[in-house]
Length: 281
Image (cartoon, rainbow, N blue to C red; front, side, top):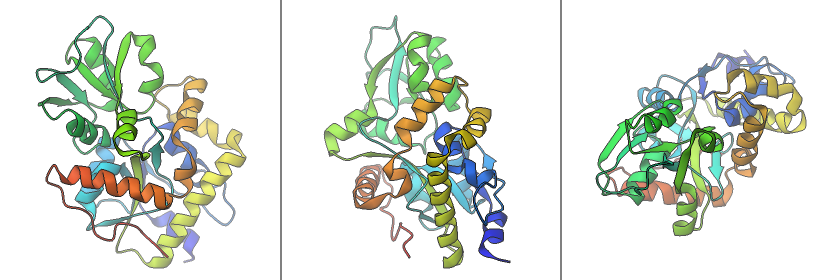
């Protein structure tokens, strides 16, 4: 079995969000030379984090803040992830709600292992009433007054105004102001126990898939559209332009510094700093 076949036999999992499907579209559809393609699981980010905690997949997209919890099982691949430059999860409330977030607020979030949750805990430690929702249900939770506020991720940041929500704070902007670094949002992890040549082949396949998508976007956008929560093409493109950037191709030294800063911030909440997190040749 060659490396292409071995890559195809791995258990892959990522989200249906446009940045992930854009990056992995060519690989999934078998558009890369000498690569048969992969058959991934597409799951909500909270479910992806759970899969990583269970060790049930070989290559998986996770929230950047949760990596210390799976450091013993996985390494961070240098490509395929998402970092924001002054943008991140949005804290929103109803337009007719004049009250800023406070100790008695009730906040909807997309999962306790998500970067959104970790950042909110970091910046608003006095708020203790936090409720988990599937990310796509958070806008409705706020609109129904089930919660006073919500943390929006993915496409929600492009559509909240249409639903009469008010953005109180961009946690990515707050992160940049406090740390002067890009905000790590999502990472691609690979099982530590896999052979080194398979890790290299997976890394190279992801990079090739992204470069193919940049060169031939018309070949992957139908795949993106088929899985996007928000079907408007302009929203999908805006999402990709914002979250698929140079850090998606290679994390680099600046990205690694940002990750170490995020993990150190999470460590204040009782999580250990990860050891040898990055896969290197």
